[in-house]
Length: 137
Image: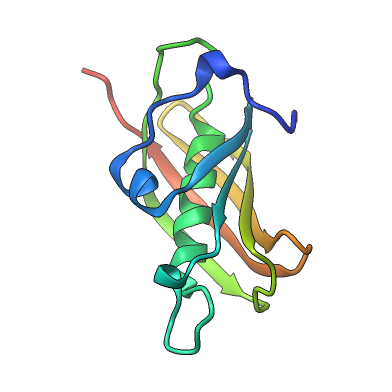
């Protein structure tokens, strides 16, 4: 697991990623990390980052963790089949960070787990997911 990303592997952000301002900050075989600055527009009624934002970051990070190819321009895509999120803490920092690891799978599906914390180290949520590779044909 490298806490960096090869600039040759950076993909253009997908529409929701661009809209939110989510940035991939690490990506390697079986691992990914995405980050998002805390801003007012992601807040809930209490002024805290909405839990759906944590879930979105975790879903994205886990999906990327299983789709690394290491080959510039060669994308591997997956769809989320199932995801369980546990909300465990409250954000106090200025940045949300989700890290994920591929934990198993085969040719058609893979499993991943992730955690979301803030830049102060507070654990916000954990997740597990099942993903299906999208056929390219």
